[in-house]
Image (cartoon, rainbow, N blue to C red):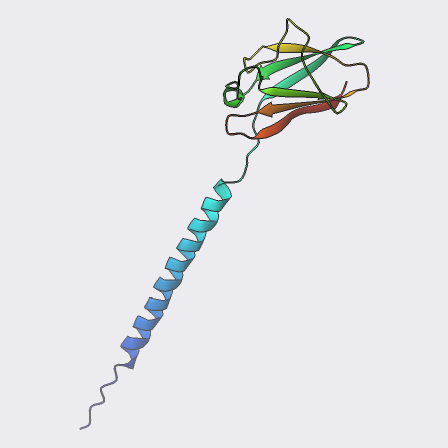
Length: 136
């Protein structure tokens, strides 16, 4: 009686398991890299700005707050956390008003009807974001 010792089945099963384990590890590493990269994407800051016309030559810009208003940068002396641009020119508030990172603060600015107003926020991480753009 001749007995065949055929151990090929065991090596096939082990090779398939080894390939599955390697592919699973490579997929996990790839997914970890991709998801960590996606978390670094810039999310927009949420700060609400209201622009209202006071008279024919003056607008009022109000800081209404928002979850990211605490991230506005007010650490630079003599610089406020907002840049107000009216028809392409940077403007400064009309004293005694001033637009700061405090919720409820406001600034009055010279702007006639039909001018384009852009309010840009300056944030503590050095980024800038347009918070308001419109014609008033």
